[in-house]
Image 1 (cartoon, rainbow, N blue to C red):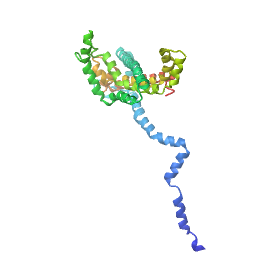
Image 2 (cartoon, one colour):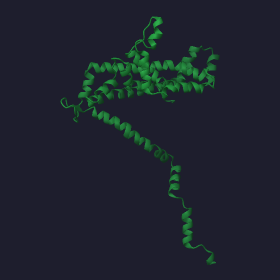
Image 3 (cartoon, helix red, strand yellow):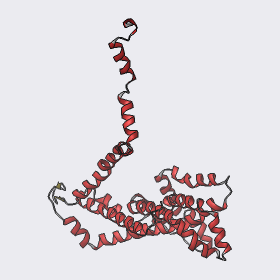
Length: 306
């Protein structure tokens, strides 16, 4: 009988082979603890966010309190609020800041007004076979280079260019280079970021609500303001975050088609090599405006259903 028994060492080896390995134990622990699994998935991206994004913002904010030697133009790491005092005291910076916010708001409003009819057609009117093609057509401008599009608009808006040629029979002239051209080009650049969320929201709009509104005798305008707009408003708010923030921080477009127009981005770019602390102080202005804009949009409750 003893010859048929399994030797102790062989039994230990068999038990060790049946025991779960470290990978299986780790998988089992993660399966039993959903919070630990979520923490393991989010640790790397959150660490990257803290180091790369929030860290750069912190460095920007700290350097805004430094000063520059007027003789050598070197940065002096001495704490001072001189840069922010200059921003608040100088009327030039106030005008440029208000102009930048006004341009961002104008671009956002124009994008919303243009996006609604386009998105309504692509989501509710066009046939299901054509909708993917229309969405691709909306996304096509995003595939082209940013500079190529802006320089193409510079050619279109130039004196004697295609826009002047098209408006001349009507006795009109093109806007040329300036603030109007900047708003026009920025609206063209960021329009797809407004169309896509509005298109998605309109595509998910239940047909039963529109039919019920029509059955109750509501006209098209009443249906739009009472039924469609409240349901699509979160998508408009989401698109406005993109159009507003991208327009607020842009400085290349205004340099190409803005003529003598100055925005905050241009002042930051021109002061990076001359006065880095002042450029950092200027750079905090768009960040603060974006934070206030997000808080205002969130306060309206438009982002809760996103």
